[in-house]
Image (cartoon, rainbow, N blue to C red; front, side):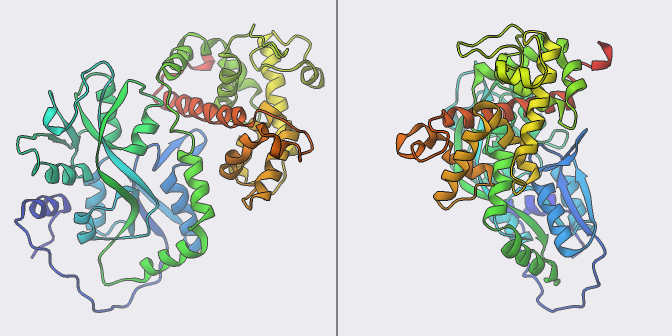
Length: 455
């Protein structure tokens, strides 16, 4: 049989028109690897390239796998599942690291690696529209990306709902379909729970109607060829480098802050990026130093909602809500002056970064510094001590965030150096800032933030 494109194979298999051939088992010689060619999909959780460089859960892990193999990483990024699958079929990529769900049908075509994390498939609709209760209660168009696992899921669901209809799009990916639902251009789509949580940072109008099926694993996919060397290398890499702490750190970095969605707050923040941020963005950029200015802006919004005259009962003031002692140390005379406040807040944050223990990974240090900005470096250190006493890693933000709330409890804070602190508020504070930052990054990528050169 001549090679057949995977989307057609999937269609035939789902319709019962194709019996799957058994894979060959005969071994063959494998040439030395010179690069690791990884296929992926563009998306906020898989692979994006912005002003700060490339990032993404799958990209970060692929970078580490290439380093483990001792070869350069070559990323092949695609906009559609079809294009990605064609690349795999043609042998242009060694594996697919693209947030792919390990479904029963896909496992008959590809060899999946260990599970990275679990997702739940969800039916998504727009706020203000009547919520459907099941797939038999849809009133409008349901569209999913062609080649996605949602096609397979809908075929299974159609056995229970024989009148169910849907459209499969080659023109729009999953993120674009979510945006279309949020903008009222499409009635429904299916998306995985992680994608929905992340996308609600940018499109707060999205709502989840219900979950479909059981949680399913996300994993990397390799061809079912006679070559098992790369798969063996992947398992070795997983066992020695990834499983446990490293995977938990990646999950925290990309997904640990996205669950606490607040519709009103997210809408207010997006409006503020248009009405308030243009006045202060040039100052954030000017005084950010080595920081991403969008992180500085996100802190400022969390502190003052970009109100230069903000005051609190505890005496902190201004855009960056500096205390009087901190302002004096930073050489700030007027905390209510936007430029002075932003300069002082940036310098203080960067000082905190330099005072953190060097054992904290560089990629997580900013979250520790933000927590210290909120409750002070001493209380943060107390939380690290409590974390270590509980057998967890004091250099992991995921672990420290879990134990920060114990600073409220006398049983724990009475045995610390600095005593009581609202540690739970500090953890929430950092998560909020990370969500604001995600939204700023997305707005920037969509050219919805003003160009500071115009001011």
